[in-house]
Amino acid sequence: MSVRGTIAAILVAAIAGAAGFLTYQRGHLRNTPVPDLTLIDLDGQTHHLSEYRGKLTLVNFWASWCAPCIQEIPMLVKAQSQYAARGFQVIGPAMDSRQPVLDAMKRFGINYPVYGSEDEVTKAMDALGDDGGVLPYSVLISADGKVLERFAGGLSQAKLDGLLAKYLAP
Image (tube, rainbow, N blue to C red; front, side, top):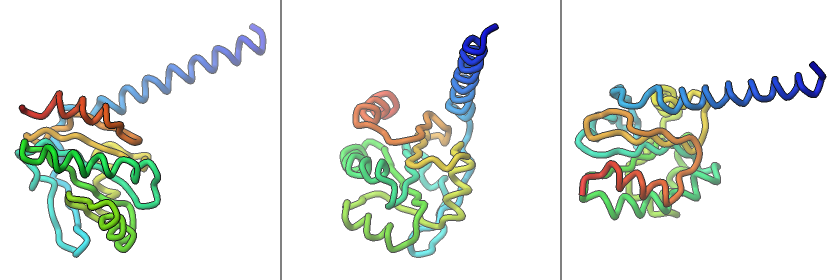
C-alpha cells in the first residue's frame, strides 16, 4: 500500500471512530433519569434540579465570556417568556464569577434562574454528559426527569423551535 493510501485509510478510520464516539456521547444518556443535582444561586442558596420536575426543562450551561453563549441568551429569554405558561423552564448554570453573571443578567434581562457556583456547575456538567467542558452546553429534561436531548455548542432558533414543538404539550 502506498503512503497516500495508508494516510487515507488512517483518515477514514479516524473519522469513523470520531463519528461513532459522537453518536455514543449524544445518545448514551437519553431517557436516563437525571440525578438530583445541587445548584447554588447567586445569593449562595442551595437548590436542586428536582425542583423543576413537572416541567420541560432546558439546562443551559454558559459563561459571560463565551460568545456563542451570549448569542443564544436573547432567544432563551424569549422562549422562557413565551412558553413558561405551557410548562417550559430554562435554567442557566454559569461557569463564571458572580459579578460578570449579574452584569449579563441585567444586560439581557435574563428571566430564568441562574446558578453560579463553579464547583457545583462543573459537577452538574459532568453528570449531564459534558465531560469536555464545552460551552454552551444544553440538556433538555422531560417533566418526569429524564434526558431527552443534549447539545454541545449553541442552539439555533430553528432547533429550539423544533424541540419545543416536539416535546412541549400544546
